[in-house]
Length: 118
Image (cartoon, rainbow, N blue to C red; front, top):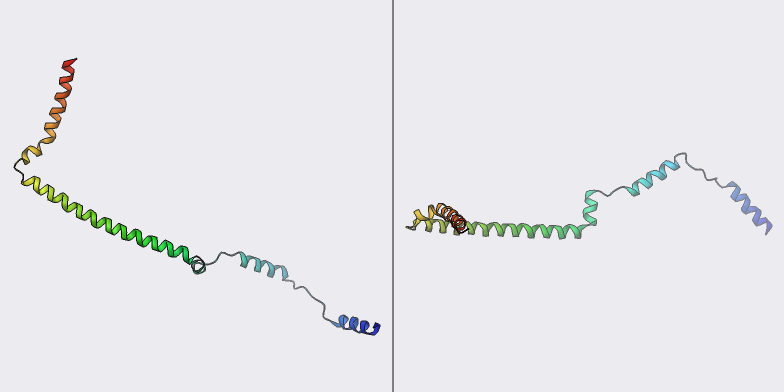
């Protein structure tokens, strides 16, 4: 058994000794930095596809709501125009045109009446 052990040690003595490369620390640091780098835009997209899908669906729903709201606003303007045309055709249009002046006179007369009661 002693001979086997001697043969083993002889074989191990002939084995190549491990040599550390002079660039070992540089290579280790490069690998560490590569693992800490932020992923690119495409990689983020592929990693977060659910979040992007939900965001896209929400944006589409908001755009559709905005388009519907704008269409309803346009319909409301037509109603206002119809009311304005009816008021212009009304024979009392001159009275309506001077309504602000009549209200101003009435408000000032209310103040005068209250002062006279004091």
